[in-house]
Image (cartoon, rainbow, N blue to C red):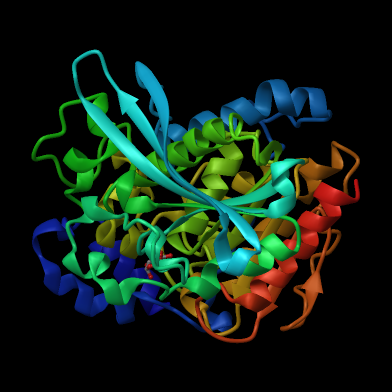
Length: 426
Ligand code: GCU
């Protein structure tokens, strides 16, 4: 297993100053199921002292907080505090959006500190017209390319400026990710759809710290790489929670019925947001892969050595001790799914997205079943990965879409079905 040997050899190397290591990513990566090492998926129910959790009471009060703390200390970082002052500014409001089928508003979330430091995030929100009388359940997620990329409506404000990438703010960027957001269809099905750009919370680069919301709480001028306590993923998840705070005050949205969703690195983020903030009623991971739903120990596709060096700002410094050392992690990604129990979780994979290890994404859900069982739920109810193109709907749902790394209408149909089941029928 050449990829594993090479990883161990390079584990202590500091890649930060040497971009040439990227050329070795192929050598470090395995896509062959036959070369997956023998591994054992740890049980989330096994406590640090060797005893086993036997009741939901024990899980909720003792084991869950222990695992949450482990993830904060070793992977996603601490949850940032609340700013001294939070206020909401309505930037625009229309009752004739999406060809007169929807309500739409843009809202700025202002965060201010007594020190004078300030930061804001812009939300774009669509809701069905009926929401004017009766609040609608919502899908909330972050986007890569600015709110203006998620809609074909040309008068939506551009966002994402903190990334300082002029391409994001070009007119041509408008509407380029409409399928990923599915707003017209969501509204038709009776849901609100809410988005903010992740760069506005933490610009996604190793030196994004000083322009991030975290700089409200600490002087991060000139800081780059991994921080001991905070991460970009933690900041993005924090942003989702602050957006949910806002939704509690929005009369168009029923904030007790919000599904958090995200694709890829933002799927890692939605899982962490859902795991750390139980107010999210459904948690959706789309192609989240390594550091998201995929089991780390399988080392198929992306592994810790690649992710931690390519994206040092995503994880805390202590995570580096698990580079090429996946087998000794005191947790596994089935723990992350288990933290959401007994709330519904949906995991979506894509057949050509081996980088994200679809089978590993499925298995982490199945290996959370024993925690769901404490609540009388079957979880996924199966250890057999569903056929490509089939929706497996359960408290832990799964599907393997045929095709590439993306969030498409096929993925959305499943997520909408699940939200209909839990938000409208139970
Ligand atoms: C890279 C990265 C993945 C991530 C993906 C994305 O491929 O290695 O971990 O999920 O980008 O966010 O699109």
